[in-house]
Image (cartoon, rainbow, N blue to C red; front, side, top):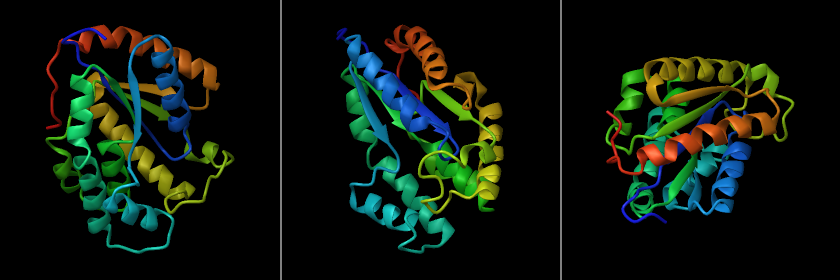
Length: 211
């Protein structure tokens, strides 16, 4: 580990079953195999008390107003910010499956105001890179376990995808878009290449916050 060099915050975003979990796991394994300390995370982080409530909601065993669940998702990210910050400062790259942008995309897709949805995310650590796995939602329905959770409906996922596209166009400087229908190995190679270039660049840069 290079003294004084921070790790990168790398986020995977996209619709349900677009391959985020697979690609984030492959990236963490690759970095660790090269001696680059990397830590996997995913949101919602379901082990905390708030995370357990979110899990009950997502698995359809609990109902909550849209505004309430949105703020709980955001709170779930905030409660882990110090943990993420500490790991980044200690030189670990943190690879996260879903982040603020999923929170905004899913709530805005339900009809909540985009700016209201984004407001509680301001001040969270800004990612160094977002890897956006993009595919027509109808192409993802045949993937394993599709439809088991609340939001896995094609029509709704189509609305989610439109919000992701909007965020991608507005935040384009650090977003990288990929065709999620490509073979897993091809996507991994592209993602690994971008990450390899990214890590030395961000090592000496201060952390920024979402604004």
